[in-house]
Every structure is written in C-alpha cells, then in structure tokens.
Length: 316
Ligand SMILES: Cc1cc2nc3c(=O)[nH]c(=O)nc-3n(C[C@H](O)[C@H](O)[C@H](O)COP(=O)(O)O)c2cc1C
Image (cartoon, rainbow, N blue to C red; front, side, top):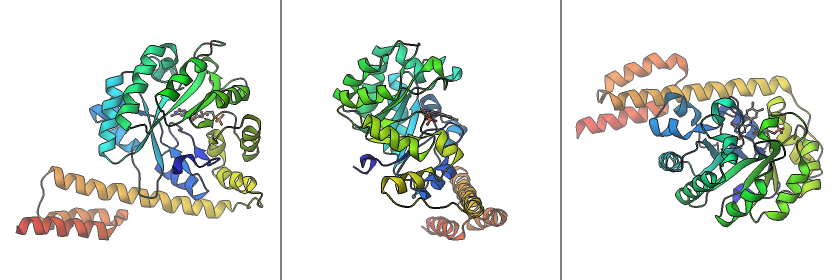
C-alpha cells in the first residue's frame, strides 16, 4: 500500500499549519503522506463552518490522512462515516495532543488515561473505516506512567493501520528530549508499521532516528514548519544523492501562486454551493455571480460547466 512504502517521509498533523497550502508545498518537496490538522469529530457531526475549512483538499493532495479528535466511540464513528461519504479514505485518531482545550474534553492525550474507552473508540473507528485508521500516541499522560506497551498489542490485534509514537509524556508538552529508545522497543513489539515523531528537526535527525530505532518511517513536524524543503533533503540523503540548494525567492513565488489557486477554488465552490442551496436555476443569475467573482480569479471552465448543467436542467 502506498501509505507504507518504507521510509516515505510524512508531514505531521500540525494544528494551525498543515492546511491544504502547506501540504501541497511539502508534497512538492517530496512529502509522500500528509496528515491534516486535527479535526473535531463533533464539529463534523454538527457541521461547523471551521470544520469544513479544515477538510479543504484537492486531487493532488493524496494520499491524505484526516486526523480526528474526540472521546466518544459513536461520535468518532459517525464523523468518520460522514467524511468517508465526502471521499476521504484514511484516518488517524489523535491520542497525543496535550492542549488543555482538547484534553479537558477527554480527547487527545487524555485518552491515554482511560484505556477501556480508548479501545472502544479504536474498535469503532477501525470497524467503520475498514482497517484504514492509524493512531498517534504519546508514551502516557503522567510523567513516568507509560501506557503505550499496554495499548499497542491490542491496536495491532485490531488491525490498526499504523502507530505513530511521539515519545514524550503528555505532561512534558515539548520539554526534555524525545525518548527514541521507546521507538526501538515499540518497533520490536509492533506487528503494524511504526512511524516516528519527536525531535526530527532536520533530515539528518530523521535518518539518525531510523538507523537507531529501525522504525518504518518518519514524520516531520516542527522541522517542516521551519523548512518545508526538509523532505527533499531527507530523500536526497536517504538515496545518497547530492542535497539540492534552495532558491527561497522562487519558493515564495510558487507558494503565492498556490495560495491564489486555492482561494479561487474556494470561491468557485461557494458559487456552486449558494446556487444549489438557493435553487437558482437561472443561467443569468449564475453568470452574474460569476462576473462578480471573476476579479477574484475564479476558474471559468468549471463555472461554465455548472452553467451548462443548470441550463440543461431548466430545459428538461
Ligand atoms: C504547532 C504544532 C501543532 C501540532 N498539532 C498537532 C495536531 O493537530 N495533532 C497531533 O497529533 N499532533 C500535533 N502536533 C504534534 C506534532 O505532530 C509532533 O508529534 C510533535 O511536534 C513532535 O515532533 P517534532 O519534535 O519533530 O516537532 C503539533 C505540534 C506543533 C508544533
């Protein structure tokens, strides 16, 4: 399966950062698998506007893993079913986030405090997704109270897709050092792919982590935030090739173009959405909407296709 070609570099879930624009940028530099920012399962079920924005994607944004957070099996499974209907295929459950807003709802790293509920959630999402869900965990919640050894065998038995371990305790947040020895132990224990996260701030760190721990792959987080070309550098070093030099000005220019395209796509969807919702079947009204949006770079071909569609509907 493409998601697990060994040593493929992943872009980590990064709340506030790993949106469509960043994912496309990182893919251009060689990120093979990207994970969305964490998305609230309840937000999906109740249909929040912000949630829709977090799920923005495009055909070249694949393979994509949608990360969900929540603490109730039925909400997680329901949310997953809804986004499956939207065409998403791979999922990740956040069991490592230590931000108070998430933890106080029993989600994120708080799941590590209630193992029975964690297993109930895992079972629900694995079943709903037909084994296409992975899990991102930390060592445990409280300092020196590791629970990952207790969790992993059951997740393997349940046929989870993979395990990502950020080997710190939730209470540590980002302090101290990531314990790569735990990754070595996890790799020995696990029968499913293991992805490393934690202190992979350069391409050299990632290769050193693979050499030390024998994990199946690595996930760049803060390393990709400060340097999206980290994927290119990592792949070059992995394949014993020369590390390409960066042209920052050219990169900025490409990123501006990409962001413009995404904005245009969003506006175009908005026209479709409004027209459908308001049951506008008049070509002239849609053309007027389009004229208003034209200065914003809306792509004409797609709008024309839509106009044609409602025109033929009106004739029928
Ligand atoms: C700004 C920021 C946002 C993050 N958001 C998420 C998130 O939404 N879901 C998640 O599982 N982890 C999240 N993380 C944790 C990272 O995915 C990663 O596990 C962590 O940063 C350790 O990797 P690093 O030391 O290489 O940065 C976030 C980290 C940062 C710095």
